[in-house]
Image (cartoon, rainbow, N blue to C red; front, side):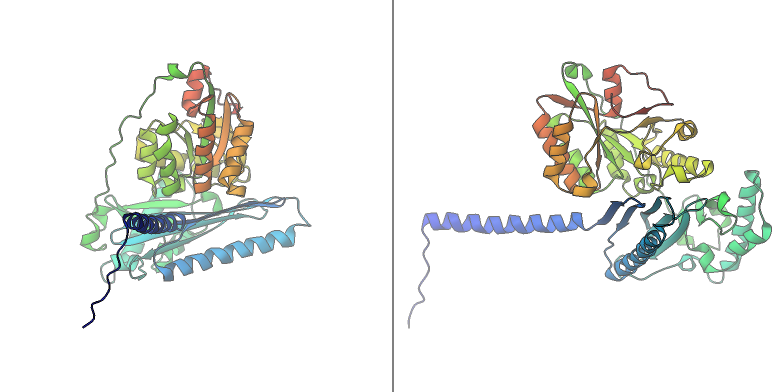
Length: 455
């Protein structure tokens, strides 16, 4: 019987073999991590001479739901671009498309709400809303009917009618009763946008559903005690998590008195992986930054927002839906600002003082309505256009100066990487401070009637 020959490796060969195996494993892990973080969201920003476009939506885990969401948004984008092209030669109006979303857990389901705002001329934005309630594992869709006891839709409709009329009366607003009746009738389509909290059932009625466009979005709360025997009992015991927020870390700013100052600011977040990557690296450069967040995102990324705040970074508002405030009526401007401030305050316990209007579009009237301090920028990295960390870094380094306010977006990994590369290159000459720290170090008394591009 022949014995099989055993392969004998020298010590050097063993070491090389081990290194190769470790390298393969690490590369695999890196690849997997990158895929997971980069595929969670889709972001698109485009600015042309005749239109602006900003689209954010999640890539959900279930492929069937993901396709439905993607196809829906793709169709709406194509409709907008077709209109923009057709009207390009006959109007000087700049069109705008903004698509935002919220993604929340509702018991064992996911609740994805997409809002589409398109401005193609006229008196106001057109708006369209789509909500998806689904099991993330199976893709099974549900509606409000799944949460109701049998044959209770009519009872719910009656309550919705009552509380909608009460809303108008409490706010001293005129209403058309027949319009309200039709918008709250016992049709599941009338209850496409909802949430269930420990307080009760929240119903969202989009413009034109129960009143004219000027009434805006109407949100109605039907108290939990009114829903017994209408909503299934297992869904009336939801306890919302209480977020305990620590006092933000305050630094001894005297150590920066002999350094030039840079304020890195990040719009359109918060996000998951990119924002947390930035937060992971701030201590390395003894840095604090400023986040101008979208109200539509703060509930989805509340833990990230909380972390950023507790670390001592400044949190400001970038409005709720990233709409061009020039195109909105006063009520809608205030709603965009107030809804964001309320969302931030509900998570952090403090109300933001600083506002950055989308596209930097502000004026004296908007400032008066907001009653906030307007912070703009003087170094535009155009990170959304290039998505190239080296180019972003070079742009920051070449334009850096004492008191500069740098514009970036923390929904892109390349933007975060570019900012960190710039900090590495500039760390010996500059201190990296938040807007709040910059104001204190420069001894500036802010004026709510002004826009600040630098300090």
